[in-house]
Image (tube, rainbow, N blue to C red; front, top):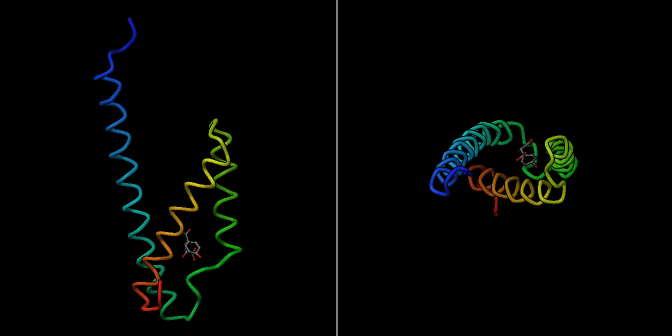
Amino acid sequence: MAADLTELRRLIDDIDDRLLDLLAERIAVAERVADYKRATGIPVRLPDRIEAVKARCAERGAARGLDPVYVRDLWGRIIEETCRLEERLIGTPA
Ligand SMILES: O=C(O)C(=O)C[C@]1(C(=O)O)C=C[C@@H](O)C=C1
């Protein structure tokens, strides 16, 4: 018989924990980016870079069978949160 639902949910929970670790790791790097941007005056929101990150992830996600629209939306949310954090750390309005 197929694996039981409890076991499958345990696998999903484990994956969610890894995703959360990676999101926290990404945010920690963004804190360092904010320090760099504060010191150099580089703006938080860089539309060309944001588009490049989304396009790269959509392409790499598609190679793994993920819907590019889903990946773009998800990264839009991830990047927006990163921008909010950087703006808060740098001291400009969110
Ligand atoms: O690459 C940067 O400059 C970042 O601050 C990181 C990041 C991202 O989350 O990927 C966030 C804001 C930028 O405008 C572009 C990209």
